[in-house]
Image 1 (cartoon, rainbow, N blue to C red):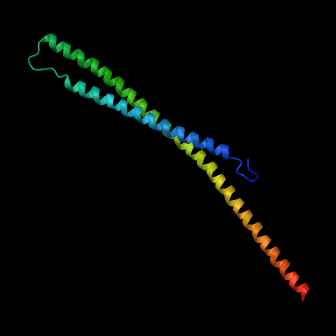
Image 2 (image 1 turned 45 degrees about the vertical axis):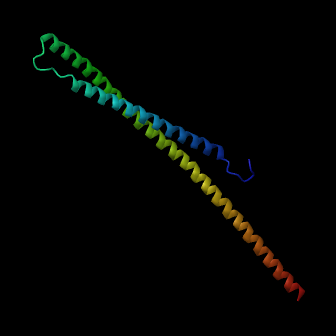
Image 3 (image 1 turned 90 degrees about the vertical axis):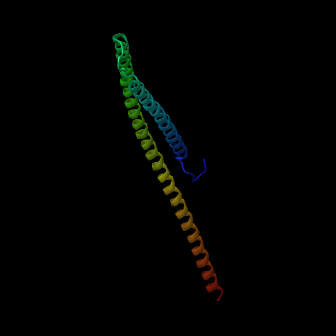
Length: 144
């Protein structure tokens, strides 16, 4: 590591990796939630498509009701899965927020460190210029 380097560089890289992983988890969770909501819509369409026709026999009527009941059960399960997927998305978003805050905190420390190093270097340079100016003036007075 450089003598005056930022000592938390490895931590900064780790925080960035955590944030990137959290972003990927959000994308995956959103994809899973979209899929779950797609399943809900499919089940709703299936349920709507299973209408009892006029003039159906009692056997056809009973079969349609049984099919609708099965589809309704599948719809209920799909709604539960979609709700769970939405909760997972929110949890992943919360994780992403936490990771981003941690990453930004270390970045701010690095920015402060860099600013302090620049200010210190500028102060050293200004002191050197002042010392040279003072020495030159002292030498001119000594020669007169």
